[in-house]
Length: 290
Image 1 (cartoon, rainbow, N blue to C red):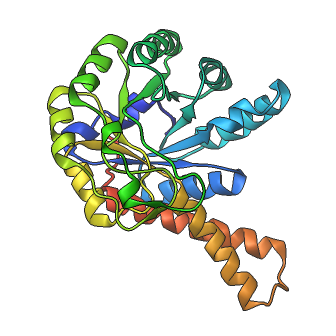
Image 2 (image 1 turned 90 degrees about the horizontal axis):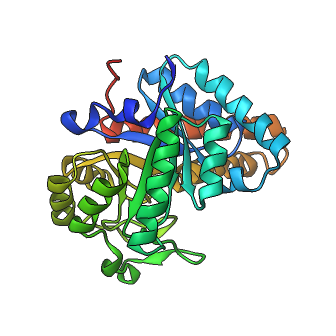
């Protein structure tokens, strides 16, 4: 099946009320685990590239990196969207388009509404001319400054305002919208609570796929609530990373540190793949009828 755009991979999710998992890859081992999990389940998947991978490489390194990713995605037996996660600048997003991403996310959530609209609108124009989808964000999904974020520290004033979401989508022509409704990036103490009333109001006003960032740490019931109330793409990385590092730690302890590196790689791969499969089950992801 191979590479598809974000628009293509999410096209049935709004009507059928399911979400497609979006998982960050850090290396070839993560890439293979994520894509292999999707292939074994026969389900679509979104493979995400962290913004610092695009920002911190010269042209030669970037070309080599993208070629490896594109090769694996193109050989996949299921639909795979290659997506830039949290592009934090216009230049970073353009690099990802040139590199071969079939979708980009521009994160202008820290900007004024007017500036966010202006930059996103121009990126939509460029991306659509290359058959690349665009995700953007209104509201702000927070991140802990080291350690874990307490539930009491979540600032509801930064949540997405439904009227802003409607205005933003109408003025930019964006293909998917990331909304802030109660989650945070990274680790969270306690249980995040999705603001389903807010999500309902956004869904009433916005007809394109909605995206949940900061999925790690949510219990299955909250994931299901988010999906039932309108979420169609869920970003999941911290939980994936912890599954891999936890498997490595378990192996090291079991063998008192005297273990071949390849065994650690295999343990991380298997844990990562199992975590992806579990999230696909929770998200209710369905095969794509292309």
